[in-house]
Length: 270
Image 1 (cartoon, rainbow, N blue to C red):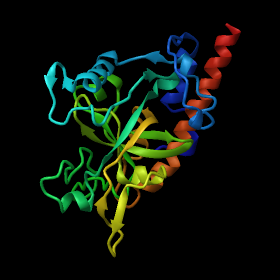
Image 2 (image 1 turned 135 degrees about the horizontal axis):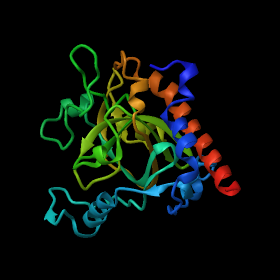
Image 3 (image 1 turned 60 degrees about the vertical axis):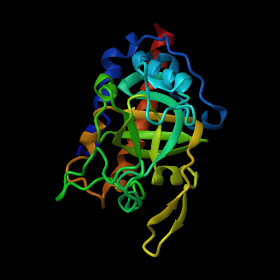
Image 4 (image 1 turned 90 degrees about the vertical axis):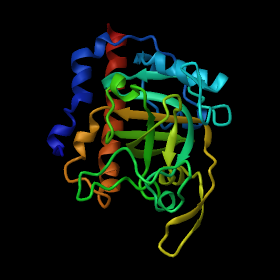
């Protein structure tokens, strides 16, 4: 983990010093009014459009229930991606929007319901004895598509994300990979923290025993910070994960806002 003296000189901040003035300004996006205050100061116009091949997949799936021209097992028409943008923002943060389905992978519920679409394990495993999965019922996490999405955008499992809906900001782990043409899934805990109740009943040990599998339909904003997993990975385990996300997530998001302000200032003075 980085100490306080080095966090503010992380790659996020160093990037603006070297490349800040030269960032291409051909990205256009206006956040939904309900979340405008939460993203105040972030310059979407200073970002660059990336991953158009992935956006084409998401659009194809929404429109035709196919992925790379082939029929998909679950399709998208009943669970539209509703993705409109995929940007690299100042400081290399990756931003996209869309819906947020419910991913129960790694939860006690998924382990007790064989044959369900959710899996008992997550793609990311903690670097602790037994390499346990991330529990969807207790840790806020997001799912990213397979098919080269992570590699192309510099994202790794274990990176940190900021997820925003209706003005609420929750810091989450990039913990799972899903279908190639599906974008936008979050853990049970992430939905609950965003005030979207998906667990209907819990048992005496507070485990979710019945899930309302209804996601957020649109206007979920995702900011992923590539390489940020290095801040939390050493000694990371199921006990300390939420505390580390709550400490490092706000610092990354604040750094993004700071970089955006510097880029905007440089562009106005150039």
